[in-house]
Length: 483
Image 1 (cartoon, rainbow, N blue to C red):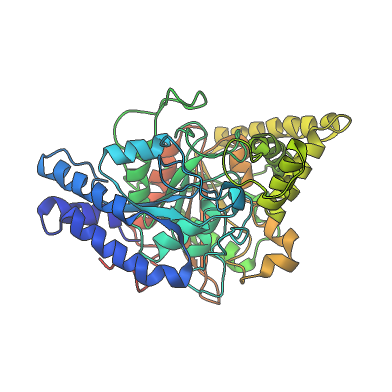
Image 2: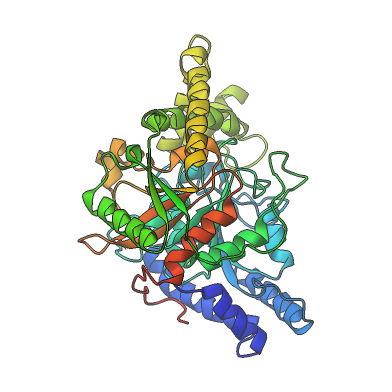
């Protein structure tokens, strides 16, 4: 694992590089690599150059933070004042928000350099990023494979070294699953630890912004920069003061292994995670077997709740206030119908209809209300596990990266690829995905470390053990900015 942020920050502070020079290196890398992997859908190079000038000013004045002057990317569902933010959907064609998301505001004030907005599944609905109106991003480790989704563009950009880090969003695994497929680190914080203000909503009770990086150290640095309570987001919560401390000391740590997470998992993935657990045990951790029966129903619960919230959140896209509007219509009702029919993609329309169905009269109690009750069971059973152990180990995904186009004839299998990640969102827990080897095809295998609510620092510290002891160093992808 490469500590890209700390390495570049040291070069900027020493004067070996200026932020302007570093930004040009990344711009050149994006121009070279992006036509191949389609990670960026909107570049912001002129704005990046202005950001770099401001960063050099902060460095000169001694006001730099670890992220000052470091080029990064944002998923295309995070609002940026005056810059295209389209959720990779036709219905938001040409949309430029009039305000900044809190996470971008915090980073911009520190002198971070925004290279552009990255590809994603339309409105974050998908597990491969192939529902994007701009076409799928390609996995830099094997361009015949998907990146995962929905934050696939961020994962591709970070993996290919055409962004030092990125921010994605995670509704049911959308940071962690593409991190697993691309062999990088993806951290989903506790629900509320990072403000969602300016994140274009999919499922409001599930969505969470988090960092995607090449190392655990970098993930902790970005997390520290964006976390904390925000007056614009009433679901946000205070987090501990000070920087996240990473020691990698796992002596006395109790690691829970729930058999339900490993049912139906590719044997190569199970073997890789078992090997990682053995490494922790050798260092003084204790492996604790636990059971979480409700995990077996977590996936349908997730899809019912997420689609119900999506049907409500996406009701605002009607062609009247902003975004795409149908060219031909006979009246207001017809205009709204045609706009939504033409503007939304197939997957988004499917989820809107499912969500509307489970909220409708006669079905609300049978589906949505029941899903909410089972959600509480999932939460309570996970909480009981943390009475017996400090963290849980689990696969990030039951498989490695799918071939391109695979979801077309295997939709159910791609939905099932979220089976290990959605319980974390249902319960609002922190979790990090990090690589733990490769399969026989050379594709990355990811595993999750899951913690109790607001144990974000502990989750990152436990993950740092892998980095500290060099337990998984995947080969660097060539073509991007080299350190």
